[in-house]
Amino acid sequence: MESPSPDRPVEPRRVHLDSRQVRTLAHPLRMRLLGSLRIDGPATATTLAERLSTNTGATSYHLRQLAEIGLVAEDPDRGTSRQRWWQAAHDVSDFEPTDFDDDPDARAAVQWIQANQVRVLADLAERWLAVEHHQPRSWRDAAGMSDLVLPLDPPRLRALSEELWAVLMRYRDDPVADSADVKPVHLFLAGFPRLDERW
Image (cartoon, rainbow, N blue to C red; front, side, top):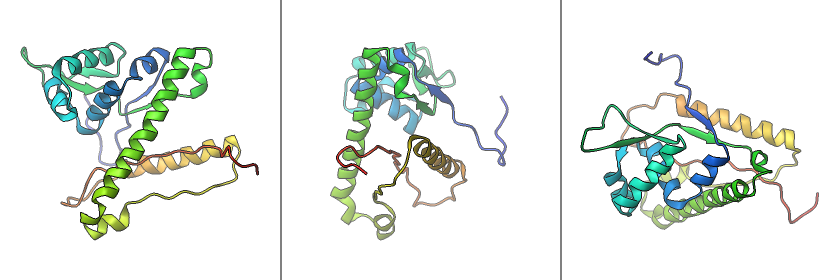
């Protein structure tokens, strides 16, 4: 396998989710398992069960369900005859909500997945706010949320989202200086038309 050049960032492994994948993924534990593997790296079912406060039997079952649709895979470099290691099969997943217009079950699954992302954002924000005053000043000044209402049409909203995503990918690929102050930071990108007011 070719080693990535320092001048050429590694392209994230992407998957465009299909109907079967979104229907299978629309489950709280499966979402958490996949998220943990994508963020924290390969792990065994036992490690994941401890990390997510669930039991190993349920964890193993749901990992197999995710493997069946190609979203996780066994890690061949770490597995043994007694222990299976799992890894995410991709770094980034996406879909177009209109991909599922003709599949009511997949459409409902997509709505659940998107609503779950909102719940995760709210949970992360509340957890940060609960401990913020104990954190270093540099982190308190750097972290936060903001919002802005812009007059956009669908093509400009898509262009803006793609441009912001490119900025996020640039930061993802930039080398990080060795520092004890480096932490994983959760970023969310969202844009929705306002429905409560007319322009």
